[in-house]
Length: 263
Image (cartoon, rainbow, N blue to C red; front, side, top):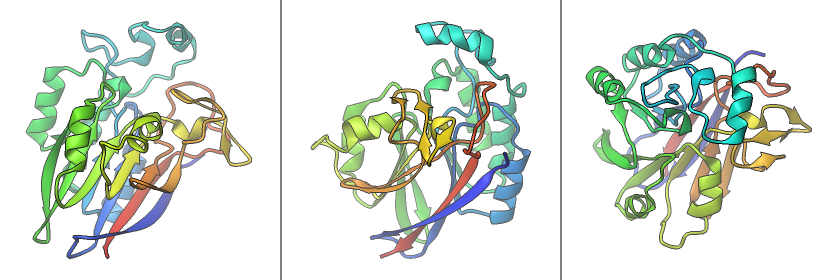
């Protein structure tokens, strides 16, 4: 099943001009040429990568999923059904991605043991890593603040980020972090856009309902698409690859574009 491109628009206060965002998630070191071709054609103003772009499961930096550190019972299953990606595929994607548009990268669970060597290479190429941190981007004379809440979440940072002035975009790899904490935590203020991945669209979709997602279990409610929440618009990507050999039934890979429009 090929890759789908889906487009959304959100009205935002504080912008002087529209900004077009590419939302990239869950590449998992797999084939990236189709994604790059779409990005080169669409020419977004900024590229936001919401985690699980690399495979970093062991402290010595092994990249293959089937060599991951076994920390939970279900990790044993991955030794038998895991689908290996390209050697250094995520890094090669980033190296070419920055030539298209400014690229921001928030970490997911598959980057648990990301190495300082990885960070140094990414910074050298111009990738802006937001790991429980945020950076400001100037857009047509107006600031846009882009933050990343990592798998090992710093909730104090998240609350402080939400209170900063201006347009705020938060990348949160885990949808369950948004549903289980951000939307209900009174200490976390409104955000203009929240971007997530991780759920892979529920792997298989029946009657447009996902079958399973990590962190959500069977028939997960948060697997893809745009939602309007009490904290702002929330866009979940179904991701760009599989980490297992099981097919993505009725669930194509997807690359998302969202335009923030002056309100």
